[in-house]
Amino acid sequence: MPSPIYSDIVDYALDRLQCNVVTDPRFGTAEILRHANQAYLDVYEASGGAQTAAAGSTLWTGGGSASGAADFTLPGSSGTEEIAQFLQVWASTTLGSTGDFNSDIPLDPADYEEIVALQSLGSALGSYAAPKKYAVIRRAKTVDTEDSRYDLYWWPSVAGFYFPAHYIKQFDPFDGGATDRADVDDIGGHDIPLLMALRMAPLAGRAELVPSIAVDLSERMKKFLERKLSARISASQDR
Amino acid sequence: MSLNLATIRARVRANIRELGPRRSTTGVVEIDNQIADLYLEMAASLPPPRLLTTGAFTIAANARTFALPSAGAIEYGGMVEIQLQSDRSYLKRRSRDELIGLHDSDTSTVGTGKPSLFALYEDASQVVQGLCWPRSKDAELCDLFAAIDPTDIRDAANMEAAGIIQFSRIGGAALVLFTSARLVMKMTDDDLATRRLNRAIAGTWEKAGHTLLYQEEVRRHNAEAVGYVMRMTP
Image 1: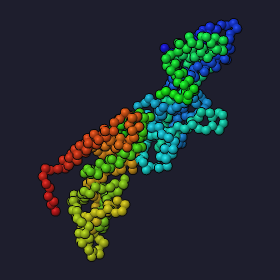
Image 2: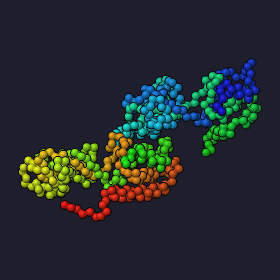
Image 3: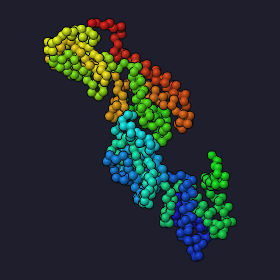
Image 4: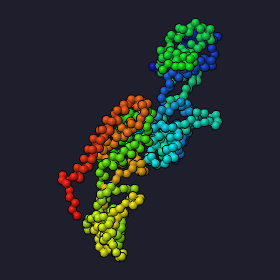
């Protein structure tokens, strides 16, 4: 079951608050969107995000094979800047590959300083005809448009490869579109309107509804919220 | 059958349970360098493979010295046979002292016949130099049959080139086991826990590796053995 669309999430949250009305609504559209995104963020944080695949030509500037340069830069303007964590990077000779070709070479992740050390050692530890290791570092932004940019370094510095990757995206909030869909699983999608309603109930003067809403949260979300609360109160988390 | 580095590495990675690069606590560089070290270590206890090269080098006209081919940083394992292409005669190997004795007081710089004796020594840059007797009258193209020591695979332009590890499948299996064992011995308890691996397996792998290495020695010996103790015929 796919996660519900934004309009269904809002409808269900307002239903639980018994204020799903057109005339004199208690919450404005923008306010509802902010609450929805806060609830979505909680669920996304608990679920950890999903794996996304992208071709090297999509991910990195240059849009293709290396021309001998030792690093590629992730562009910050096409939506690909929303990367939280790289899971796997490949070296591929195929333009559109997303790491799914047999000939694609899975690269070992390495710290940036290891890449630098290997490059400075030259061929002392052997020579290869294809990249073997990579490091992705987040670049300090010098202007606002460079937010969330990444640089890719690989070793050995061999030209002629694309670098497709699988990664976890950063949180991408609802934009308010009716058919916008949360990037979480079915249970997470079920929890979003309930979490919304939990936060909005006192604001609507209906705090008495909180227990009945909370009881419908998934067991996973209850456990997550207990841990989060425990961490805030005592700065400790059960393991 | 020669083996590729990638094949050996893949089998090592399967043994030490790090087929997923993100679970790696070693990595491709450390694994490959361990393979390279152990390849040399194992080769040191095995008879070096022999290689026949036709027209490998030329003894120049009027020369009494020559050098064995050294391209590719080749290093020789001791056994050397030289055959002249002109009359298919083999040069007999003698000590350098004997060759010097034959050349003693010889002031001529002109060759008078075909070389029949030779002596070898290795210079400081591992190039094998030769001395022959008598001086060669004509330029003599020579076939060379020699034992070649294994190369350090790290010296290759591409470590992953086909057939770079010159072991049989038995030797290759031993190399996989020795490498796996050595890597496991270096791991901390945390590394082993990440891989769900028991340190005790290293001893088993080493023991199995020695069995295979012994078999590789026997196999190479049997390839040349004639079933009786050979006598040197001068």
